[in-house]
Image 1 (cartoon, helix red, strand yellow):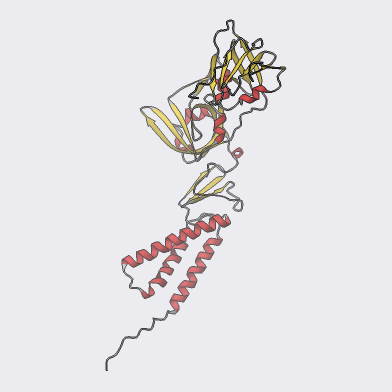
Image 2: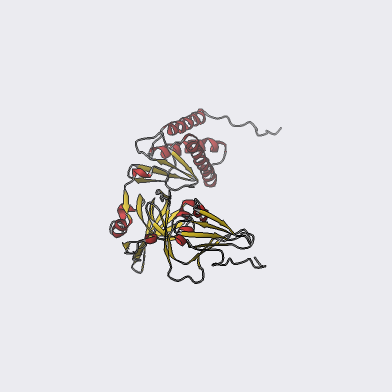
Length: 373
């Protein structure tokens, strides 16, 4: 009579139960500590090793099996750590780097980061899942640096700026869309309209935003702006330096509360002159040398104010002294103290013509839609 092998499962030893219990206790203790310290990931890795021993108890411990179990548990640990950090605003155990700047700490982990705006405050942490946002703390806590001062010293003192959040105030030398701007050293000019200055191109601060920033639509070249961001890199291109700033955030506001208009009449009144094409409206000037929009902080030519969204065309229509209606169509002239605005019949034309205070319907012509339009 032949003997058959027993199919009974091998019972777990006391060591397995004890190691499982120890692993759970270690992980709980690690999660209770809400500080960045090397002992936390070390203890968690120890717990992973003990859990691996439990899992491998009934499996032949080949190197590949050991590697698969360890990597799986490590992946699950990072996932659990991230979920706990997001849900309970805790400092991640598996933070791979910490960015320190003034009184701020930023803990970078896989798929998230945690902002500690006061290094002594561990309760009011800010969670940024998937690195979606730029600077998240109060920018008032960082001292502002004038762009000329920063750009003149950053190359020689780069080590003190690298991987630090800085707040820079200066003039925009270039802007593309809602994601990108540049600053360069500048000298003031005798021409002050539109904030005009003369830029140097020996060094450039190139600032990138994490996502589209609609506030940028109100800024244009020569406008003063204050931004805060992380200094990431320094590049030398044939003696011309580029400083890269990431996670940029605008912390200034253009004062557009109230404006006045100053016009200079032209000595000669010829054809109307194109100022700005908005798409649905085309704005011209007639018999005017210039038209300046004056805000509390800066003065802008009307074309610049319109193109940078500082001024809405319809804002010019407010509070006329007199309104004249054309008998031939729906064109309207709004009379102001120093100028007039002709709003052409919008069923026939896109034109809006800003002219002298004496402008009349018969002195200017609205361009009529073509059949293609």
